[in-house]
Image (cartoon, rainbow, N blue to C red; front, side, top):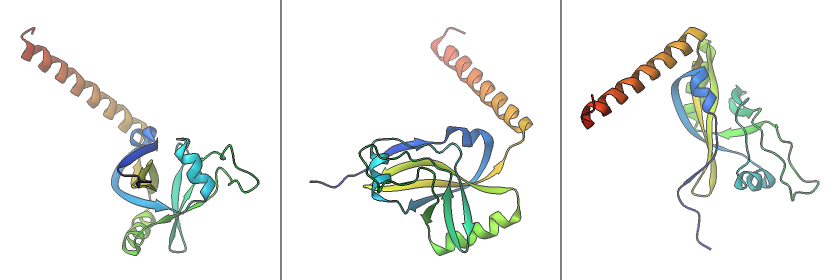
Length: 158
């Protein structure tokens, strides 16, 4: 049987880009059990409440919901357990320094299969205030209006 190739998205945290200013992103691996991978292959996961912490020089992903595998037995996993994140030591040291600064957090942006292995994108992020969110929405709306006007101009409708 040929090996899986390419990238297949499992879950995405769309609210994270709205709630946080993304400063840096990291592609990381996860330590998972067999039933977790089978549940992910069915395309079921939620990153909404997820975050990552650095404990004892290791990075842990917490509150990510991977539901129990339906055909699993008593060996099924706990849906919201802590999962170890696989990163290079230099990246972990960089994260330790940045998160100690204050105001910065690690948020999972998406979960996907890459060449048959489960990967995640972790973002070093700073929380937005409500006025920042309103400003971003206003900028997005104005960009959309400019694109519409430009499209009408190009088509000759003015």
